[in-house]
Structure formats: C-alpha cells, structure tokens
Amino acid sequence: MIVVKLGGSVITYKNGQRRVRGAVLAQLASELAAARDSLALVHGGGSFGHREAAKWGLRGGGPGPTAPKRRLAAGARSVNDAMGLLNHRVLVTLQRAGLSPTGLPGAAVAKLRDGKLSSFDVAPFLSAFANGLVPVTYGDAAPDSVRGHAIVSGDQLAHALAKRLEAKRVVFVTDRDGLYTAPPGEAGARLARRVSGAALARLAARGGDGTHDVTGGMAGKLKEIRRIAALGIPVTIVNGLVPGRLRDALRGRPGVATTVVPGE
Image (cartoon, rainbow, N blue to C red):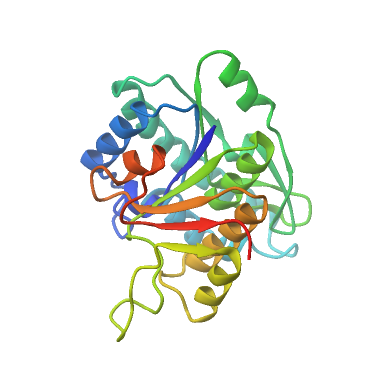
C-alpha cells in the first residue's frame, strides 16, 4: 500500500482562478495507473480550495470560536463546493487513465478539534479497496468541535492514511525537486537526496524551501512528513512537473528526489 499526496501547486495553477494543469494531471494519472501496488490518493486545493479558504477567513486552519457561525458555515460550504469541483476533475482524469477512483471528501472522513485532527474514519477506504476501487480524498473544510469548521489539510490526511493503512511508503508530489540543504539560490545549496527525520527538522529550522498558504505551507508539510517517518514509513518528495519522477518513486527508484527515512 502506497499513499500518494498530489500537491495543489502541481495539479492546478495556484495563482490562477480555478485552473487545472490538465496535461500535468493526465501525466500523473498515467504514472499512477502503472503502479504495481495498491494506492490511496490525497490531493490538495491549489487555486480551488485555498482561494476560498482565504476569502472566508479560514486561513491558518480556521478562525477562533468567536467567529460568526453563519459566515463560518457559508465559508465551509464554499470550500466544500470548490474542492468538490477539483476532485471531480481529478476523478475523471484518473478514470481516463484506466483507474477506478472513488471520491471521499475530507469533510466526510475527518473531524477536528481546534484545528487539529481528532478523528479519522478509515472504513470508507477499506470498503473502496474491497470493491476494487482507488480511494481519493482531499483537503477540505471539516467539522471542528471548537471552531465549528476548520481546514483539514491534505498533508494531515496523508499522515492519517499512512498510519491507519500501515503504508509501506508515502509519496508527496510537489512542484519542486525535493528539499535543499539551504534555500535554493544560496551558495552551497544542494538537493538533499536522503535525510533522516532529525535532519529534516534541522532543514526546516534553516527556513526550508516553499511558501506559506492557508494550510501552513512547507512548514506544515514538513511537520506531517516527520510524523510519518516517525511511524517507520519512508517518505519520498518528488517533482510532479517532471514526467517519470512519480513513476520512479512508486517503484522505489526515486532518482532526483528527497527521501526521508525513519530513524535518527
């Protein structure tokens, strides 16, 4: 079992208005269809969910408990609708590639408490596998027992899936080659091909590489990757904009990528 997280910055033009990278998504779908292992897929929000989350004040997970409930509910519905549209595009593309996907909204499988994942329902995923389907979930506006609603990120869902399904590997598909020893462009910066969880924490402390978004940006991603590695599960970070990188990672040949390995 391999869990694959398709980053929103890879499958959409993140600075555009709800624009899907159709050719990139089709290429990734063909590489997923060639996988030899069973898959559980997660995708981010990109120009669909992130814009809506920011518009309605759900940035950084969600507003506090004093936010107007009516506005909060309206914002959650807006995020749900936008993410549903993106998920439909993802499912159609996966189906055209020969897979049998089924969509599982993040809001339907995850519950939060003050912005943190408090429960995760793995049963729909197990049912999908039993019926020969590929489950596809995504970052979403989910119920929150403190705030009413908050954002559950695709990265949080990837960690929950890896843990509950006991994945043998997790692949994060991003718009970068991986993690660097220093911010790209600085003297001496090079791609970190293989790092431990402890080394990953040190890379993050140096400022890392990436930008902030409504789900925490690269810092939030690195936190979840460290948590996955702590489970004893290796994580590979690949550039999905380069054809073949995902295929190689799925086959255990990461090539140009960063692999985070368990241990110190």
